[in-house]
Length: 301
Image 1 (cartoon, one colour):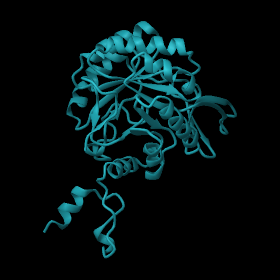
Image 2 (cartoon, rainbow, N blue to C red):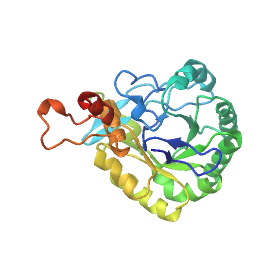
Image 3 (cartoon, rainbow, N blue to C red):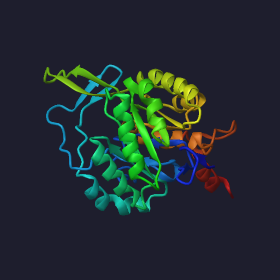
């Protein structure tokens, strides 16, 4: 099974499954090695990276919500060049493509970062994360800078949820190989333990109907631009809904923190590699996450 998740051409990115973790939920590729089978994933999207090092946010970072969680990390990282030195060999050893999530800080840093990543053989593509409340003009400038820097690799652009409708066309015209719809929205919530108001990104099932609607509308408006659906995926059916409205792939975010094997199960199912229970199977002959390889190993004799 081979799925093209970017625009066709010499730099197109093909994956074996339409499922991957979202930026900021999977580390830099080494965190979950002992918890799930990377062979089942279409790609790995790294934690956000900036050209210069960024320090973590101060104070309270996580606030529990009635139907999700608000998180504010500050996008801490050691800077692009050090990230490449520390994880380049890790990426090369992984069985699926690596997509580095690059934070759009300023146009010059985006161009330099994209040019640097373009020469890293273990990187398959760049995902450019745009700031919230960005104008379509600035979104186009950032995308153009990334595309011109990454001459040999596709640039996927993750749009902010609130502005996706306004900037999608300009980003596509600037050369984005695909669009991610969308980044988790920002919000404010009161931390009950400290009594302080905390700003951050919101994760949870209620994000899905909003993002799903955007994917459907933008797929109709921009039928030639591949769209990766993201937001509120907490089940196989959630992921399938995105594919049904036109997404070529999906990114799973917060569910991975709570139940890492759910990411693998979604990936197996959408790639047609999850075994359904036979009517005469005994309880010890099947489990919900059984893949086709495990099934063959058990019953080939």
